[in-house]
Amino acid sequence: MGVDGSHEAKTTYREAMREALRQALRSDERVFLMGEDVGRYGGCFGVSLGLLEEFGPERVRDTPLSESAFVGAGIGAALAGMRPVVEIMTVNFSLLALDQILNNAATLLHMSGGQLPVPLVIRMTTGAGRQLAAQHSHSLEGWYAHIPGIRVLAPATLEDARHMLAPALADPDPVLIFEHGSLYNVSGELLEPTAPVDLEHAAIRRPGTDISLITYGGSLPKALAAADELAAEGISAEVIDLRTLRPLDAEAITASVARTHRAVVIDEAWRTGSLAAEVSARIAEESFYELDAPVERVCSAEVPMPYARRLEEAALPQPADIVAAAHRAVN
Image (cartoon, rainbow, N blue to C red; front, side, top):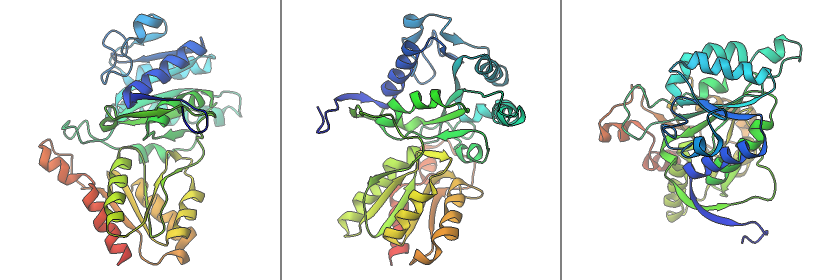
């Protein structure tokens, strides 16, 4: 039992997501899961394994291979009062449903004068690092964070994987949850909080005084590893996990920069037009006179993601790249 009376249990990120889905299905009969291979196969990444047997085909629905069709069906179900959780296998496939997400889910509440909320949750796997090559290794969270009318979440910890789904389902607006594929096998002690997860604010994952490392999702473990290496050199790095990419917690970013006066933004997406660019712009607009050095960005190489492991590793942000960026800012 934790010091605050909460309980801890050993689990993986994948199992935490599965338990979140299980709890949602148990607690609200309006909730159902739909997507490609979520039922009999148990999900492409094993997240929904066993849920079909527990809840049946009405609540765990395998869909045809048409993202536009089943995301549209999810929007319709949400409009009719249900609470659908739609799984898109990987983020690149979400582009086939971009019209549904951008032109329907995100706009109907506004276009109906507040009469048509769309309480829809869309989950998808994102990111590289698993040798899935150029078509299945995208990090497009920043694209969706550009769209008004939706909330964009990037759970990076076991606790967020387990507990972000419930408040997402309670949100009257569409919520997109991006699960980084490299995190599914991460295991550890899962702390059961005594209060709902906060979807409004970033989290300080490690306090520091010399430089802010600002990141989200699958890059959080790399930022924490870089912070450990910097600490061994006497450099105190604060690690900020953005968690919610839209709406962005600008206050947490500016507060951190006010403490450290330097910033490195780590984003697995391509550098040009990225979420890292938006965060950097916010710092320039709101914290310019707090800075003692230019903002550094660590992003993926601007190439289609290579298949070969060493080339893929070279293309992705790595702890050594974050450390080097921090050295430039500090020195």
